[in-house]
Length: 124
Image (cartoon, rainbow, N blue to C red):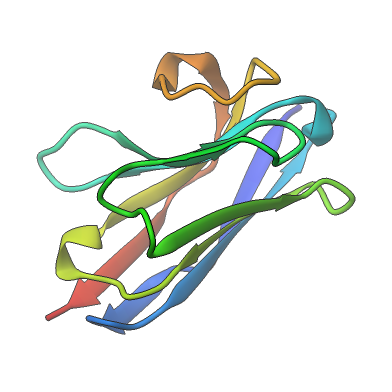
């Protein structure tokens, strides 16, 4: 059974930082692309950042470029999202996801497995 266990998140003031982690079990993590998505109240789930199986190819949403860093440690089966210079508009539930493909793609339908979600709230 594939499981994605998220940790991190919480409440921070604008300009603060948070780090999200996602441990993947039940599949060979290093074989697949992975990513982070988020969903704010009343909005559709959107891509935050994705990377390919080796971590050599990364894609970021324009809204987070220069502030967020996605990374992975294949030896630990773990995906990370370092979030700096947080803004109130970053407030959302954040989800990690493991793809069906080795290459990073930006479509949610390509991601077969999802974490439980973690709330990130940035106060102004």
